[in-house]
Amino acid sequence: MAASAPLLAVRGSVGTSMLFGPPLCKENTAFTSDSRRCKFFVFSKDGSLFAWCNGETVNIVNVADGKHVQSFDLPKTACLGISPQNSVLVTWQPYSKTQETVQGEPNLHLWNIKTGECLKAFYQKKMQSWCPSWSDDESISIRSVNNELHFFENNRFDTIASKLHLQKVTDFVLSPGSQPCKVAVYVPGIKGGPSFVRLYQYPNFAGPTSALANKSFFKADRVTMLWNKKATAVLVTASTEVDKTGASYYGEQTLHYIATNGEGAVVQLPKNGPIYDVVWSPNSTEFCVVYGFMPAKVTVFNLKCDPVFDFGTGPRNAAYYSPQGHLLVLAGFGNLRGQMEVWDVKKYKLVSKPQAPDSTFFSWCPDGEHVVTATCAPRLRVGNGYKIWHYTGPVLHKYDAPSDGELWEVLWQSFSDGVFPEKTIKYQAVPSELGSTEPKPAQVYRPPALRNKPITSSKLHEEEPPQNMKSQQGGDKPLSKAALKNQKKREAKKAAKQETKPDDMEEKVLESQPKPASPTAPAAATSGDPELDKKIKNLKKKIKAIEQLKDHQAAGKPLEKNQIEKLQKEALLLQELEELELGI
Image (cartoon, rainbow, N blue to C red; front, side):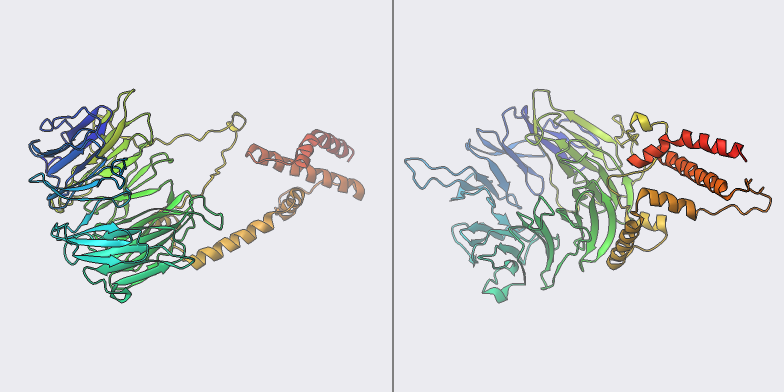
């Protein structure tokens, strides 16, 4: 049952519950719902165990039958973790001191899940990096302690097997998979010196030369490190708190690629602005970046940091690959309107464009067929609830929290790789009782004064289409960076030439218009008086200019004060012309 329908755990003000995902979308009666306020819950890596803390106890149950495995009397617990092989439960509570215990009591505990025995207790004052990291086979585990990384082997936490000591180590990430274990460490710069990220392979830590790779950079107050699934490369997003150029409120970000073979590069992003999201494809050979001032640009790069596909620009700030890697969702959540784009990664073809407004959470179902979006507190305290979608667009299940209640978190059950194989991608929306939420094309608001006049297209931002749409529209290959730069220069020069005075423009337009040269056209009547003919010609010229101004006004273009005055003189000019022509 679990393999055919992954479970979804839900916690909120009404308690903790669990339901089956599509196609069932009904409550899992094997799990007894807990009405107490749940602070934290977690599935084990293989999805066989589920643990949660409710302010009184920490409970572990077997997901298949709902039977209790262990229960611990730990009312202050705030965070939980389960080791990859389900051997160790990790509990953390906020560090505190009392008059009796000046040093405080250990607040990080490691428990044997089978026996309930406490294996080790540590002091962990900061919540950052609170949980030890394990290799997939649990042969290695790591903790960060006072500028050092402590390595333990085979869950023997009484003995430190090895240490990695670097000045001011602030962050580390252990590679996925089993042996050989690799670790990426970040050390911030000191007194104007560069920051650096180094990759090591356990247990070779003897000096800087033992590092597999080393990358240093100056613009970095903090970094985010992301291993690919095969543990062959790391993506490092380096961020500064303040952008000294003043171009961005969010500081300045750069993206670096570091491989375990020693290769490294700065990922060149064609558009300036923040880096919103970076995500590896499950195949470990490509990665997707969402970047640039809004509307943000999205590009897929290969391991050489060359662009593979450009999705153009749009209201997006996040990217999510499906667990199988065959689909990619580009979304704009948070302060954006919740638009999602589902893409077939192999064909780079758009599958659907559902919309989930006010969403604060998104997650792929392990089956690669469904996703969940949620509006959760405390990010938003109104309109809380979640929706389960099929990737083709329809909503299959919907839950709305009570008006006086809140939804805090939803979490899919985890599964080992290969449990859900990749399926053929569908482009036709699957049937659903709740229907689809594909956004209907909305009419643009037009002021009453312009509603009966010709429509002119004007956009606040010019959005670029995806790469394959560009080739269909223009028929040309995408321009290189240098060609785009030269094109912008030419357009700017052309625009500068056109910025002349309105009166001069009218005169030039009239002078440049071709005169009719039809042999059958009758010759214009003349009076024989050159002065009179000249007056008539000038009047006709002014009247023609007024007609053009009227056309511009009808098209919604703003007119200047002297042009409006010309429009007001139209009747006088027509009367004067009529009187002169009657005298001929």
